[in-house]
Image (cartoon, rainbow, N blue to C red; front, side, top):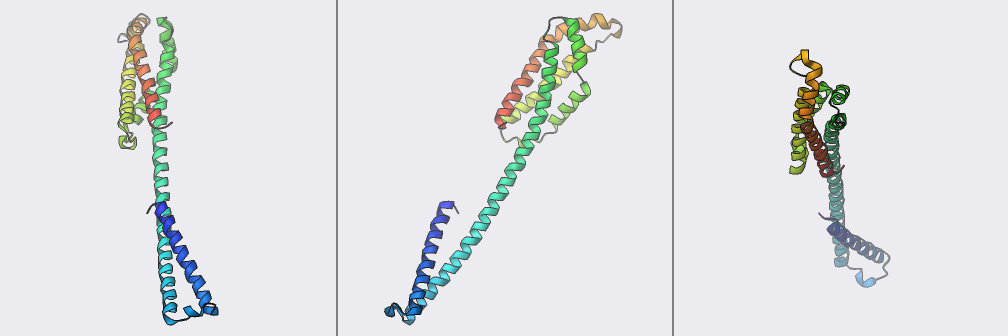
Length: 210
């Protein structure tokens, strides 16, 4: 029952109750002798009974509506907390991507390699990717959010592979010669993957209302 209808019926019931009360008082003190008849008394009793039944129904309806609204509010709060947790996981992926991007801001390949050694932790980044993979996509509530989260995951996986290829050369005996060449070859792809993670995180945050 909508609030407007509830308020309207409540006013009608209140009017009946007031009418019954006033009529009963008049009958009790015989201020209106013409009403002092058995049919009048029966009508007053009937109106009172109807008002009591209707009042009880309205009270039950109000209690039911309040409980329903409270349940819906709790459901919305639970869902929002889940989405906040999902967004926090995506934010962790974005933070890793930002760190990697900053490591490749300079054109000096050796500095790139040293910087990435300081900021890149494959185990931690892999844990973030696994957390994204474990997210129940139905909690996101929209195609845009699902699409953005999947793109963050895909770009993060690709980013880890690119950084690994640049940082860990296949031939360990040529480590200092291979790293600069690998870093230079992969730099553009690494920056692209970082930008994808950044952009999709912003889209995800906008959809989830952060």
